[in-house]
Image 1: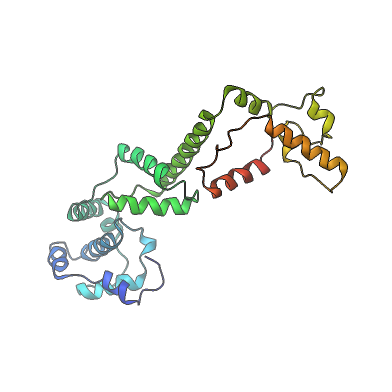
Image 2 (image 1 turned 180 degrees about the vertical axis):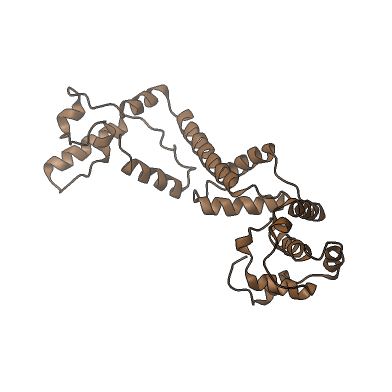
Length: 260
């Protein structure tokens, strides 16, 4: 829920108690009814429990008015203490949810890797996608710290699988020539003779990354030499046919800024 627009009809509806809610809440002690009602309504709308900071005072006032209790700060015990834990367990059962297990966390990593990371590596986007997935599976989302670890693990797993799939398409000879690009240029090689080495050329791949500079016969010769170097790698022509354009651009940008 977006904090701020608490007067919209949709939000008012989501914070309105049903007759069944009133019956359930009436079984709680008067001091705990407000906290239980807020947890109940928030979970119904979001499939997770909120932090205290997510609940605007106007929401607390709206729910308190429906319960006929005084508006005020929600007691910590009723929110996070033993009483709060009992409330949360009851609400999970009510909506058919359960807390995430270690196995669930591993499954979440696999799901993000297979269904979300290819579309975006943005942590906020992946976190939002994971919360939606958890709700569809009737699993309470993990804690924020654990979600962050799951997102990082899924991103790493996706990149590992992507790189492995590319490597599997290459011949041993092509792999060896690619590895050689990470080594310093051979002073006796044709590359060294044709391309003027720059201070950044600590590895041969930097010769391919250097800016061509102003157009001239010399720069044209250098670019032709670079092109020949790429052709000698013998990369499969269809190597990236099934790779999204944005994914290729992301790796291109990484290569452009990383030192070799």
